[in-house]
Image (tube, rainbow, N blue to C red; front, top):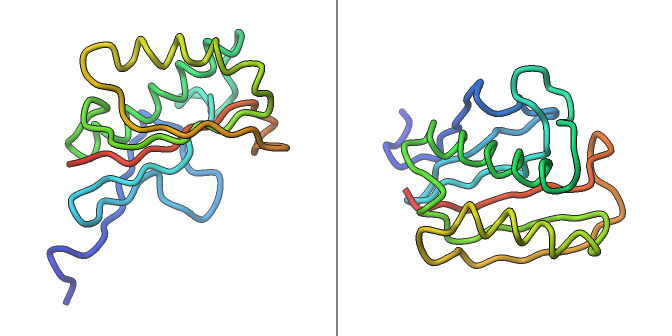
Length: 131
């Protein structure tokens, strides 16, 4: 018999399907842990068009969709990690990020440059969100 407090997966068609053996999100211990979201259109599974601003916005919208499916939202985010293949995009990503968290204190965050990301993406964002 499963415990009522056992970790449980969260899934939604409003965010891109996982591209590997992982869950879009896991609820555990009063938090939602959202897997890294690429800038993929949830309807097509393809990368969104545009610049880094559009791609960062799509990543954050995908995070928000998983949060919504778990009964929470980005305003309750406590920690995000931004992965970039080029830190020269940092300032432009910050502008988009600031708009998504304009109505309250922004969550803690790390931003790191990585050599590569799945699907040739140049940005990926993951989150820990309070439920």
